[in-house]
Image (tube, rainbow, N blue to C red; front, side, top):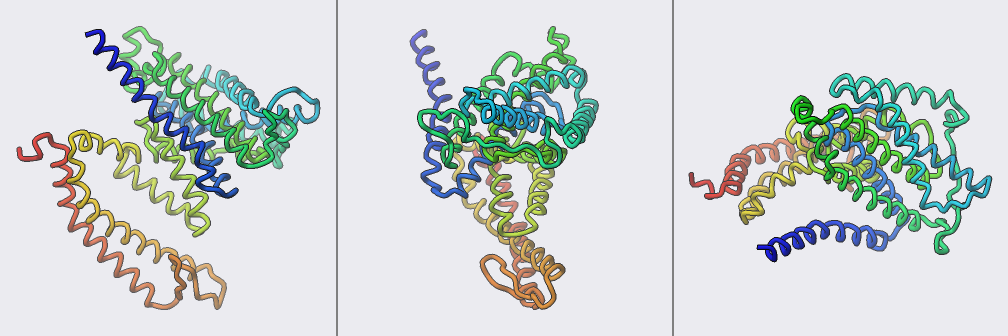
Length: 425
């Protein structure tokens, strides 16, 4: 029995380590797979957003605390990192660049400790309103306290003045990428381990039923406080990495807009699964960087995606993926392949048809006089001609009709794939 248990424990440990090893290897190889400065810039932004989203999920997903001012801790960490970076440049402090995120994290931790001392007394609406007030207060102070925030222009610096690390001076973007990737792996691992600690597990209990947690002898307030402080620390690290990557920090790094964006990102990816915010950060960054180059209405599509997620997939994109785990474990995932193809492909083309009409409407309303042609899905069309409108409308109607007709087949296949007896009962 002892040998079997030890072998199972070792197997479980290896199974837990495998995703981390694969993800780390993928991060190392990505700059060579996407060998361009623009791609590396997008990957840097994506990694920073992942850390920020995971820190926010420590509040919302694990602790049940809805915050409307979480960007304050990221921005504060970024400003502190920029000040330390300038001190290294001006006073010659012997600090290598890879250590600067620690200062951003500690400053975010200090600010979170102060705010959390009075904001974590309650959860729910009270906490949300306090976080909103604190966020607006500090954002407004950023244009008043010029000595720290730099006013409307913010604070800029030069990361290359730090001590070289093994001959690396961080002049090239790929060198900054590996620095950010290192902190991404380290921060993600630490946040994952925190979720497995007694405090992290009790945060889930306090989120679900604070009264029962109190009956068990745990203080709901202190559990929320510790989670809040840890979240502020990792948000500060994300802000410091932002300062290192872009070499400038402004009021936009701590305002309400960024706090709302990280709420959208986290909920889009899924707050019930640890890797959910990672998916949300990747999807949102790609939409913000790649889709924004194709259309001015990218925010409209992001809003529509968020609305659809809230209405139909409240568990987020990660929750949708986790719904397929039982079918995969039972070996019945193959029942879903054909129904998915017959249902989702027409739905995608129907959405593209609606998007085409939206883009043509936007071009017809806002294009200069005489500018009738526009680029649409790698084609050139006349937005004033009735033919493109007719084609887009027909594609949308037909595809949505096919989707609706095939939906019952998908529902039946889903029931079959997730029922142990194959749905015969």
